[in-house]
Amino acid sequence: MSSLTNQIAVVTGAGRGIGRAIALKFANEGAEVVVVSRTQENSEKVANEIGALGGKAWAFAVDVADSAAVSAAAEKILADCGKVDILVNNAGVTRDGLVMRMSDADWDTVLNTNLKGAFFVTKAFSRAMLKARAGRIINISSVIGLIGNAGQSNYAASKAGLIGFTQSCAREFAGRGITVNAIAPGFIETDMTAELNEALRAEILKKIPLGCLGQSEDIAAAALYLAGASGRYVTGQVLTVDGGMVM
Image (cartoon, rainbow, N blue to C red; front, side, top):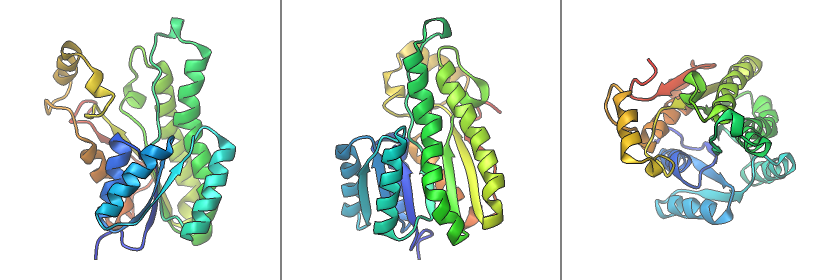
């Protein structure tokens, strides 16, 4: 039997990159996956990939920064699936810029999606998990939330806030058998890092003891550990997957 058989997993930001890798990893381990992204096209693409592998998936287009849309989607998901065992809050955006030049809109967009979005989604599914007295919640933070980065004050604030949110939820939900953890990826090969020029990439690699960027599958493997039986006694933790960058 696969490790997540009979589990229902909701993954936000699952249309590409790390979220897609997590959705596919969970499906390969037997979970039925609710693929959530901002566009129906991306959601359906990943859901179809899961279907082609013999798995079961649902596709939802949801802006996690929209509280009403999240509540409506959660209600439909719980009605269709009957339960949610695993929630991965992965949806995130960047709007980089120096503090002195950053617009209010760029600050708000990043905080609303990366931090408030995780709050909306967690709130929407937590009642069902609490009632079931079981569940795994995994928030995808970032090493930038641990060490900061010039030009990314909004992103760093959102990801640092997500760590505090994770630890608070872990304390709130532990009595009902729900674990809440965060993963802090380092520099991972995604659409975002593909845009780095060679000089900047070389500078980044100098800071990584393992000497290479990570893969989305590395984060998916960490998520599987936290979602599966091996992670049953782990809660309120930040699992840093960064090649040693911030050790």
